[in-house]
Length: 546
Image 1 (cartoon, rainbow, N blue to C red):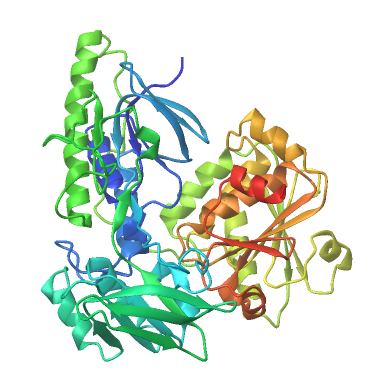
Image 2: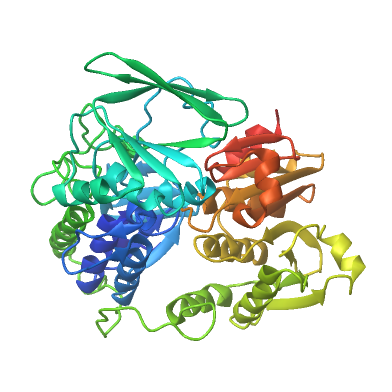
């Protein structure tokens, strides 16, 4: 019998994680579907200072604790893109890139994405000076000047974060004052590396390969001024967000801006369907309000599911599976080594599902510190699965294997299938941070059972009959990067003509310089065509067929 969840939560940001915790604690059979790394925007926020009970916390750390808490109460996590939904029946259907899921209730918590301004040069220089994520791209602007566009929470907080790297940060705000809390504004004014210019808008930006020119206008005096630099500089845009609700058009009621209205219990206009977090119309979009939304939505869903079961007269037969019996408030202490025990435990579960052997091959250049570190990381990971093997060679020790895996940069680890064939999947960097997810998915997809892929997409992949190299430039703090890496790797696994390399570009200055990389993810096809931003399999396929 096909499994029916009590609640399907779409999105793993603070709202979704809070909903997962409350639903799991209520003993509901709960699944959270997230296309990237759990935590949403919170996972890319450097500091969280206004969440009650949490002082001086880092966004990724808070997100990790939230996820662990949801898992402690039995919430299941699944990685996948939402393709289609059907809320018309009593049993709700959600189709994803990883398969189809059915549930008695659904909580939509897909959040929001940064808005773009649309000024001339914004699109052309995205990835070459224009950026939208300080945590992802801030380090690329070390010792350079940076302009931050915006006057709200995000602009103020990310400007402060960027002072860790930039030699100067200038905030350009069209408003006459900050629209965030005064305490945050005061921190901005107190920072010697930040200059604030109000009543001003960016008019255009341009340059050669990278941005080195920008024009601004005072919207009160109409005075126009220019900024020219002999070196590159950055423009970070933080002007608000737009809801990520495209997949739900026609399935739930929305307002003109695409937000999903709800009642006070987070219920949409469809019975059994709830919405929580930044995709709701509301005055304040912060972690604290998202978490509250998620808790309310899960509580309402629990009551709905209980009544659903009572009416169907199947309550006894459909009791939720037993959840974790011990309530844990914090994550466990980190064990010695690369992996926390919680993460190691999760990886063991994934690797137990492996249908075939996968061999990890690393060639160690002892003169490269990261190469030695990668060896230690792989030794730790390989111990977590019986079907996961590790081969370690010193550089020059086995020329045949080096040629086989095209070992031209260090650190390096390549993936061999159960027959010892190199399958085009390679990492040049430590699979830590968000890229641990893409590393695990590479193992899962190569060993089987792997993520579900449509017949149509698979046929298009098989049609590629020319050798193709795909480099995906990443930083380990980028939550968008794993999507692009996983997509490229899947192409390589399914077609022997394709090679997909993950490259931690902060470790390879020559690659950053060669391709003028100032933002990630960066996708480089055959060392020539360069594009920026997360891409799905079908989008990369389109790039390959140009």
